[in-house]
Structures are given as C-alpha cells and as structure tokens.
Length: 339
Length: 286
Image (tube, rainbow over all chains, first blue to last red; front, side, top):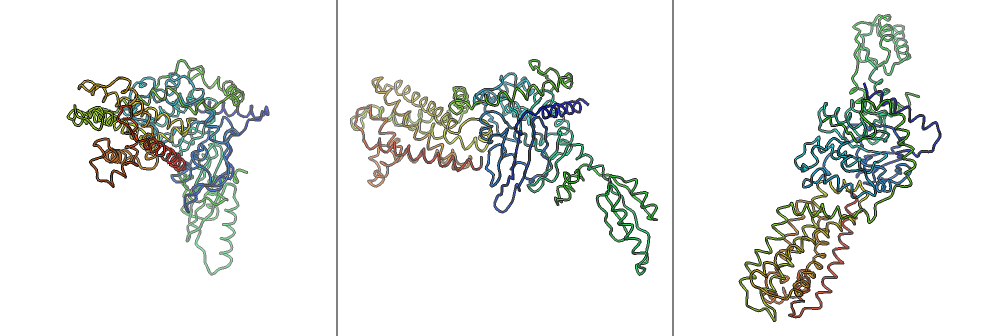
C-alpha cells in the first residue's frame, strides 16, 4: 500500500535529520498542562512532545479532553497550569506567524460567501500566504470555487476548512476530529488526498475517536482518557495490543478440604501468571480466564494441567482501546510495558 | 473527487514515496530558514480585501437592505412628504425630517452591522478567525467601517428621494449633514458591537432593532421632541439618538444644542469601553 511506504520513508527522514544534530525545537511541547471546568478536570497534568514531521493521532473517547487540549495548544484558551510551546514559541505568536493552522470539526464558515471568497478572506489576513487557486486545487475544491458555502455538502465544507488551513503554509496542522460524520469511504478518501501531497513534510496532530483512523494514518498514537495520556507509542504497538488473546478453561475439580490439592492449584496459577506474554489471570468459580499474547503456550500449559473446555478468543482493536481508556492505572501504560 | 493538482511541485501521489525523503528534509530545512522570517501581518490583518468581501456580504443580505434602505425611504414618504411646505422652527419640515430619517437609517445599519459579531460568534467564524493572525480590533474595525458605508447608502437613498419629491437644499448643506450622520453613526456601530458580544445571536439583532426604535421615537428622530411630556423631553436629551439627530441637523441652520456634542462623545466612550470589556470577557470562551 502506498501509504505504508510513504510513512516509513517519512520516519526515516525524521531520524536522519535528528541524527545530523540540528536543534529543531519540538513542533509541540506541552508541559504539565491542566485545565478544569468547575469540579471537572478536563485535562490533568498532561505532558506531550511532538517532533517536527511526526504524524500523531490523539485518540480517545468523547469527553477525554482532546478538544480542551487542542484549544490550549492553539491558544484559544488558557491552561490553569502548565505551558504550551509550538516550535519553541507561545501559541498565539505561532498562530500570528502562520506556523500552525487548524481544521475544525464543524462550523467556522460563512454561508453567504462563495468557496473562493472564503479562502480569499482568510488569505488576506496572513502576512504571506499560498496562492488561492493553488490551495483550492490541493484541497480538491477548484471545481466548486464559485459555489456558495451554504450549498456545499459536509465533505466539501471540510475540504474548504482544510484549504484555509493550508494557506499560511504552516509547519504544523492540527485537525480536530476532521472526519466526524463521514462514512468509512469518505474518511479514507479524505486522508488519502490529504496525505498525498498537501501535507508532505508537515507535522500533523489529529484528534479522533476512530481507532482504525489512528492506526492507519498516524505514525504515533497518543491515547487519552480522563484528561491524561494512558498510552503513547508507534501505531504498530497499539495494534500489537490487540494481538493479546483471552484463553479460558475450566480448572480440574479439586477437593477443597485437601490442602495439597489447593496448594497445587495455587502453584498452577502462579506458573500461568509467570508465563511470557501473560497480562492477567483471573479465576471466577472454576472458570479461569487469562489474557496473553502467547495463547499457544498458555493453552498447552492448561491442557497439560488437566484443565478442560479450552477456549481461545481474539480481541478487536476496539477492546484494547476500551480496556486502556476505561482503566488508566499506571500499570496499564503502554510506555511502561514497552520499557 | 480525484482532481490531482497539476501545479503542485511534489508531483503525483504515485511518484511521491520515492521522492519523499528528499522533499521532507528539504522542507524542514526550509522551515528552519524561514522560522525567523515569518512575520505577523501589518495592521493586525486589516485589509481592503476584507472590506470588499464584508461589503459584498452586506449587499447580498436582503434583510439588511430592507431595513437600512427601504424602511427610511418609506418613513420619509409617509412623514416627510406629507409635511412638505411646513416649517419646524426655522427649518423646512421635509428637510428636517429627511435628515432625521437618514440618521435613523444609518443608526439601524451600523447597530445591526455591529451586532453581526454575535451571529458570527455563533457560527464559529470568530473561532476560525482566532486561528488566524487577524487581530480582534482589525475585525471590529472592518465591521464598523462596512456598517458605516451602508449607513451612508441609506443617507443617500433618503436625500435622493427628498430631491425627487421637490425638497430643495444647497448641495453643501446636504453633504455636511450627510457626513455628520455617517460620523455620528460610529457611536451606534460601537453600540452594536457591544450588544453583539454580550447577547446570544438570536437576540442581539432583535434587541438592537427594538432599542433603536424606542431611542429614535423618544430622541426626536420620528416626531419632534416638543410633543412629549416635560420629563420625557428631559430624558430624551440624554439619549444618543437625540445627540446624533441634533448634530446631523446643525447644517440646516435652525440652530442646535451644543450639549449634543458632549452627549455623542460620552456615548461613544461608553460603547467603545463596553465593547472592549465585552470582547475581553468573550475571548475567555471563543
């Protein structure tokens, strides 16, 4: 697939530029960022650093604090605590110099202007901006340049917002759930065209609650829940989390009164817990359930231990996502596990 | 949608992977070089393009045109023409009324123009603009100037109508009165902006039209002040509509109240300060 080659090529070039030792400030640097609304802690002591050229998905359920973080990142709201830097500059300064631009989820357009006029309007407020026609072409809306915004479809409006974001030739583009409301095909088309040429060499941060989208289009996935980062790693690591399977079996019947038999069972459970790749072991009644990345070894051990009714089930990415975002105890952090 | 850009230097997507490492590092060095060259726009992003596009939006809006041009014209035909030949004080009544109604037209144009910021805030356009270098002051100035241009159009409509219905006045007098109407209308633009930042979109325009109607009625733009009871007359002297009307009618030669100048300056200061305060309050939740 062409996107995969694109991605690896980009990652490679990032590494080379890093090894040459030029001191490029991080594209995004969030330091101990916190923001509350009343008693609700929307963003809770969040730290994040993004290198220039990275394509990062900011993945989390609704209400995870993605938009609040992005608002602070763009200087639209002030953090209660912590600092934001974009290429080493405070956000408003970066915005006024066209270093960063953003594609919003909805709204933000005037119905009584044409597509071209909207782009002209935005172009006029930047000190320097790309040619209006070029931007219309890159966003794939040259054909509807003279249509009124009112008459545009949701997808066309999104391309228009994207065109506006391209105008200052920003080094960082932030997209807040850019494909909300699109179907799977629409989402695919959007990303393929966006990545095809317009976004080459740019740092991209996009918020999404679609797991496949994060997996497919980002180099790095940052998982957020309850205003905190619960996992942060290359997308293949996030994908690997779904490689874990659940192995369940019924334990052999034992005489509860016999200490030796109870002891043997405890030893079995300890042994299972110590196997490579095992994430958890859980016993309810006589039914044992364990999560492991090496289901073969687990199954063999259980079978050898006279367990019955063996069952192996695989997980979707969605399961991994839910287990990570619903339980954000430190032990679940991907970063700590990867280390 | 598969219209692939032809003018794009990075060529077609199929060729992209091979070229990628080169283009990426090239653009990141270019970025490093240009980091210091990047500048914020002059005048906070204020430009003629913005004025042109905003004016175009106004002229496309049928409701705006009805309220700022047709209403004052209709009022003139009802109240002005019927009083032709009579005098109000030392001034020709129809002329007096035409200037008053031009003042009213400009007031409506500028107030609703200013209050438009509420609608744009609700649409998320203000948020969109907050992601550009456009300074809020430049944005508001654009709105105010465009509203004043529309106010000027409503003055021209009323004066042309007056000329056609046989009300004659020296051109210099009309120009002076017209210029004063447009100048004083800035007070109402500031009033509109303040309301626009204080009220939700669905109320801002309605509330402002209602307030203007009452102010104009009391302030002597629709009927002479003298018909009101004493107390109301005293109150009327403190309304911005009275100040604007008195100043606009000064070139007609019937004498004017010098306090009207103080009135207008004080109101302008209040509304500008109020707008600044409302704007600051609003930016906490763009």
